Amino acid sequence: MSEKNYQVAELARLSNVTVRALHHYDTIGLLAPSGRTQAGYRLYDEADLLRLQQILIHRELGMPLEQIKRSLDDPGFDQRTALVQQREHLRERARTTASMIRSVDAALAALKGDNTMDLATIFDGFDPKEHEEETRARWGESDAYKVSARRTKSYTAEDWQRIKDADQEILDALAEKLRGGAAADDADVLALADRHRLHIDRWFYPCSHAMHAGLAEMYVSDQRFEASFEKRQEGLARFLAEAVRTNAKNN
Amino acid sequence: MSEKNYQVAELARLSNVTVRALHHYDTIGLLAPSGRTQAGYRLYDEADLLRLQQILIHRELGMPLEQIKRSLDDPGFDQRTALVQQREHLRERARTTASMIRSVDAALAALKGDNTMDLATIFDGFDPKEHEEETRARWGESDAYKVSARRTKSYTAEDWQRIKDADQEILDALAEKLRGGAAADDADVLALADRHRLHIDRWFYPCSHAMHAGLAEMYVSDQRFEASFEKRQEGLARFLAEAVRTNAKNN
DNA sequence: CTTGACCCTGACCCGACGTCAGGCCCTAGT
DNA sequence: ACTAGGGCCTGACGTCGGGTCAGGGTCAAG
Image 1 (tube, rainbow over the protein chains, first blue to last red):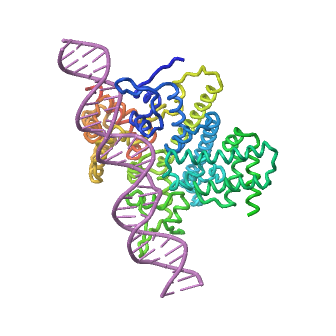
Image 2: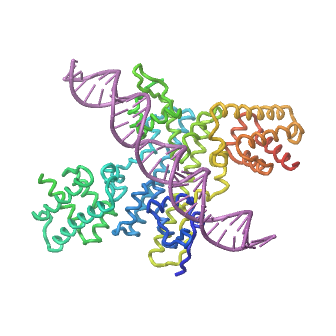
Image 3: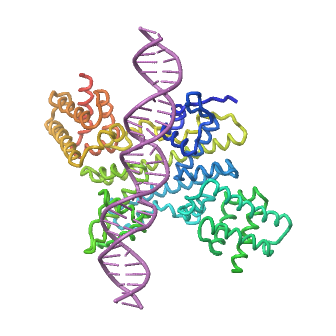
């Protein structure tokens, strides 16, 4: 444990973040230095370094700081899955960069005279929603992020806690059922699935049965979601998805 | 000439930019629609589409809108070189993305137990200044951008015009000398070189002889600069650079 | 002649910092 | 012991790139 401590300016140099930014991250509670000197100087240790790296990766990909904070502070947050996830986003970025290069090449070709190019295609590299399905899951748990930003931003920390607790409760009950050998179309299970839907509907955004079914799809197809469910109970993702589908059909 | 016209929302859909953003670009003079209906509805034509693409490429790379505007509005602006330049920036981005992926991989490795990793290296992917030399020339003409942002941002449009005119005048005089067969160490030429330095010093940032020499290096080594000089007069970039070097040595 | 989908211009609001201003801390040199 | 120079602190206000109403025209379809 070489508990090296860093002052702001040092960390700033290491990470290529300004001192002001570090101050900012401190005041919004995103990265609080693990210590202070008597004089009040901020002291960062190596755990802080790692957290900052996480922050920077997320930030680089355009995630709002609030959101980054929630991700990192989530007790259910798993650094490894997060990193794997981020690597995926970076690969996505590599793809869009490549696609933008092609788009620029196309523009160059157009200039060179073969003006046979379809003007509508010149924006091809720029659509962040190009891979609709992928993007829907982009921010993991916060699919709510855009859809319900307005509603959620007024939530306090305690609100979030309560919401998360309620969610846990539902999932725990489902896991219980699963362990007990219940079928996904068992009445109780279906009821739980609908409670899940209503929970989302209440706290995040209007959630129809159809939308719920869509979400369920994502739970099994998106690695991050799946991992988060599986950690709780093996097979839970598929179980919930199945129950949700059935519930949706019955309504 | 299929002069198709687009309304805001149409263009917004095509380009994946919000209507509000287009309004914004209009009000700051970055992208003014080429026409309006009697009712005042904005009408964009295909030239506007192309300009918007340029804007988006630059924006994607983080260039401030003011700067984008100046680039695109510069009469000396050459779309082709700009595109080539941007392609280079995109490639750079591809490289840093790749480097970030490696950085994430390193973090993953660190988590896996082989904690032999040097913590200072975890920020490796994140340094935008990694390739110092490359970056110095990054924004082309606006090497002044960062160094003198404070000073230049108070300039009005007319200021810019006068500054640019003065610059043109100096370069024209140099081109004249070059055509007349003057040597780069001709007294008149050296005087012009020094006027060039003083011009920068006055309007942009403190420019010592040494720094001027550094700039001159860039004029011949950076394609964008070189092209801009060469367009005015063949051999001008090298001529100016030579004169600047000599002038610097004599001081 | 109304309804719904579009468009306009203010005007205010926001996130993520940059940029002072005023003041404390802490070595090093005199 | 004192002062100079660097680093640090906390407000407080400014900026950039838009988002988000509010209040009000426009225009084709029915």
